[in-house]
Image (cartoon, rainbow over all chains, first blue to last red):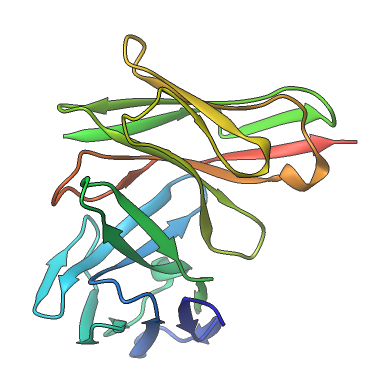
Length: 115
Length: 113
């Protein structure tokens, strides 16, 4: 079974609809992240959480919200979807070793199309 | 502040030829550096990472990267390209502690038969 799972894998929605993307992990990591990937722009950070009680905005958080329901679950919501939120969304987890090196582990992605 | 720059959004090589994907970084402290690979319709997976233990880092699938502080570079190489290496490659930097990882914009590698 995959360590980081995302649901749904594909989603088509209409402008103005509220949608939620879910992420679950079995790696036991405290840190979780949501990124979006757009062609030519690489990965951009939306939100991140260093533990259940800690949630922080990334570089492009406008129009998004998150919920850290448990150590293993981190959900991303689009309150009112718009077409320029069409993208590939990735969830990631990470551990921070005693040497301070952080390695990220990614889910398979959710492809979102907003019409 | 930290950043990475990947030179070339698309690189094409012939099967069996050398693969060279370029990455330059900027960091105010000694960085940790990573290369991730993304195969079509998949998430990113770690290829290799530099953690200051050794400047030449070997990763999976025959890839390696060399940290060159004087050039602020961390280029990815593979002596002989295989068709299965066709993917998008991302360089990333982390300055440690509570710094977040910053990704480059990616380089798509095409391998020509």
